[in-house]
Length: 109
Image (cartoon, rainbow, N blue to C red; front, side, top):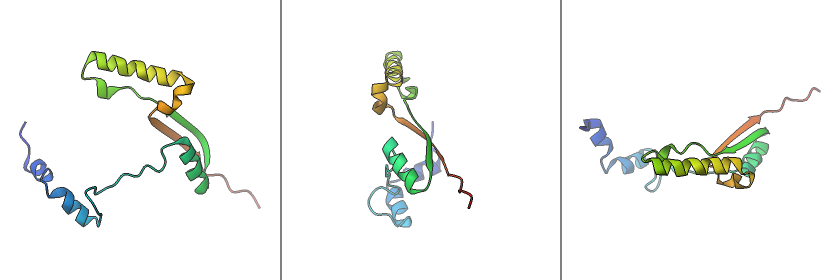
């Protein structure tokens, strides 16, 4: 499949430094990633600091779609997913964190 002119232009070596200069960012990473809310404890702390109540926090391991390139790898990933989702002691190995927060209703004066 042939690349379009836009694809070739966006893949040029000058794009990342130009993007960083335009975004007033330093270094090679135009949009640095900061993991500030990636654990149940961090979610609870940040929620409390913002005035929210934690309704529920779920940790789950999703289907191993990234291993679909072969049946044996997908089967191993599927077994891993089943194991960590069913054994309570392996909750720290689950990669998807879903939190439900609620803003408390103000109390009546």
